[in-house]
Length: 556
Image 1: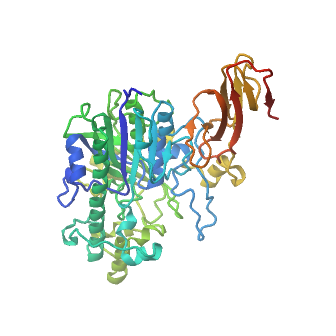
Image 2: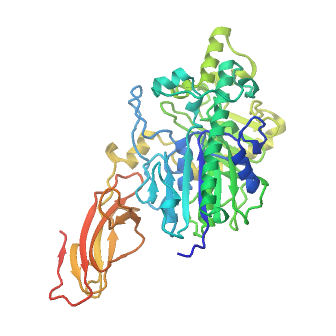
Image 3: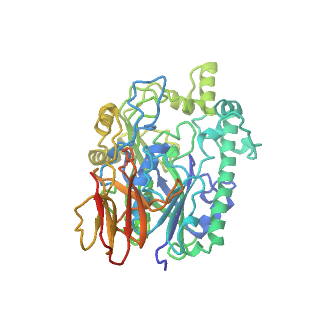
């Protein structure tokens, strides 16, 4: 195979803000990431569409806003013994025309591997990846086949900042590595308690980022070993900001601003720095564009690099139900200003999200509040019992977003402009934001039962058979192709001629030509959010010489 299209590698870090040396952090130990930035482009204004993993990842893998497709509530598979009233578990059912970015790539000849996390609010369909698991790698492709390979690093997750005692409760036998970063040297946001426990938590995150840098270095070395560096686009990013209070789960920059580094020798200027706004919803469209694949009209993002790059004036972010707690926050940001709308201003900032309460910084906040009385100044921000309906921040001069300008007359024009932009965005993309989750789930899973994808059918076509009869077996003397069909709207089909659990499933893109001899076809159909169909099988034989009698048994 003569490869003309670029390979593409995504390296995804969890819960990571731009605490890298190349972003100016002098405490960071990130030589591999810094070298990657020196060989490519560093984007200073990249943002997630949500400050938490699953909604953010759903946007990345579909190119669509979570609120537009019903993937905005965090943890749709979440079952809480304390909140049985939640309409969970369920998988988000995407519109029938929506396919995942890797499936679109597979349909255009790419080998797609994911190592290993998905977390999309729905199970990754069998049609999405050629290889999806902890051993998935581009090295499983056919010789010369272009590839799209995703590598997910999860040790930077917020739980990595937990105390040893907390970790042992959830993960018995976990050994804590000695701390390398000096806690006295970390710089805490002013709204967090400056205590030894908080400093140690952030120092742990620096250590985990250093470990992530080693991971990045290994992947880059493997590209070099395989002679793939010059024809491979490498994109490094995080699914959202770091797991500190008022960062993860929030629409403040600490929760949605992410690192983004792209290396592509030749097309991308080495050592370039870009101030352009990028949303992670643009990642998928960018990959499709670089691969020369026409962009489906349903995509909400657009390419941020390459010949089809489109400038972006605003990025948008949302916050909805996280675990047990419902909320609704919408935000829009331009290159300088951030506007946040709190639809539940009567609610306190800190809701009951048990997982987040395990963070040492949260526990320190509560300890100080109880021991010292009500906290004052910036440390009191998260403990307020009410929120303003609107927040406006000058992110350039107030990077921690602590001075709300929404009531100041000097910023009235900016406030009105961003209000209107958010109104327009909500009108088009906030489809499910005001719909009760229970009603949304009922529309996707009627009666709270997951829909089942229709079982595939086999339709042989040759000079005698015009493609009308559905068959499960047959023997043919003439060249024959087999069309596969599933009656479920929007279903994709995977097929294989291999036996066993280790069989490699191919994406069905057109009729399958029968080789000489006997062929057993296996097929499954799936629509995203639906239950995968039962497996269908058919046994066909092609013998290119006259047969005394050609037989065919039609299925009932």
